[in-house]
Length: 345
Image 1 (tube, one colour):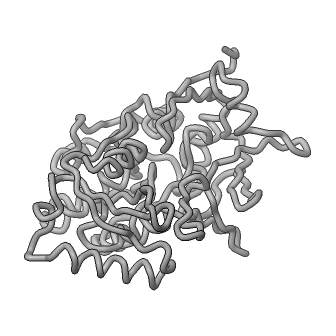
Image 2 (cartoon, rainbow, N blue to C red; image 1 turned 180 degrees about the vertical axis):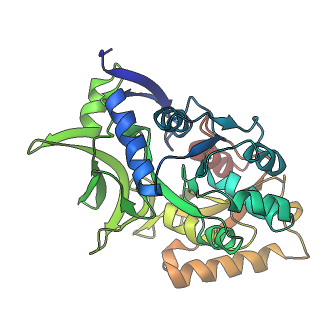
Image 3 (spheres, rainbow, N blue to C red; image 1 turned 120 degrees about the vertical axis):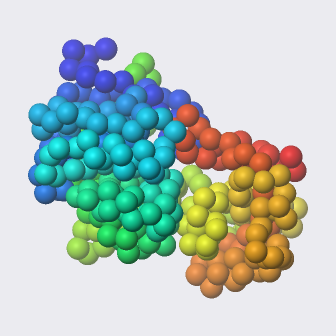
């Protein structure tokens, strides 16, 4: 291990394949300084994420560089506990890093509790990342006065390096064959004891080191980056390429489906078809509430997807499972979900 190594973060991304990301002190500092500049200055952080993941680690790094103590919320995220912990913050500026599920909980409770709403609204930024966030959730949060900042990044970039679509600090972006690549002083040194993985993800071109994210994206004329989904999370349905991430983003805009996962399963007729999967009940009839009929809900979702994406992207069905399989990072384990749905378990 190099002398410059400050941390090794184990990550599985969205694939479930474990990798150990090597981060230098320089990369961690560059990321923390870029965040402070982008958010309007150093502040005090509330830790709500595990410190052995890069987003949690960066809360500690930012706090150390700011010379301010860290406060934290006990494991098992709770909105009232969040509000109580926020009362212990003493600095003028206050920040927190969250995943969308945590933000959703703060929104749900904040819509009912003025005390929680006021505590969350006091934060100068709710830095939210880790996975895609439904636009409807962001709208509800902002309606409560929450300052939501969408963060895009990974362990390989020492956490978020694109905020609300725009690169922060010295981060640069480009597209190669439609896939987003990032150059930044925040880049990891590579993967521990995995030179082939490192060479596949990082490359030097013209003296600049680039990280290939594996995400399809669009870069607009003003530099804004629009992430479209994983380049490898695509199925061919009836001869047409269908991005499951794009279908999932559309489905998650439907009330009640904010946590849905869309996977591709084999089809004798079409090759593969999208299937919407929801967790929390052993059957779809038990999951549906307020008298909604499964056929009507599916028809509504199919119409939405057909009109926004195309006919081939229409989900074939909706499946309910009692417990959504998760990776260690808290993200859905898509391989496990696919296996369960395909087998009919």
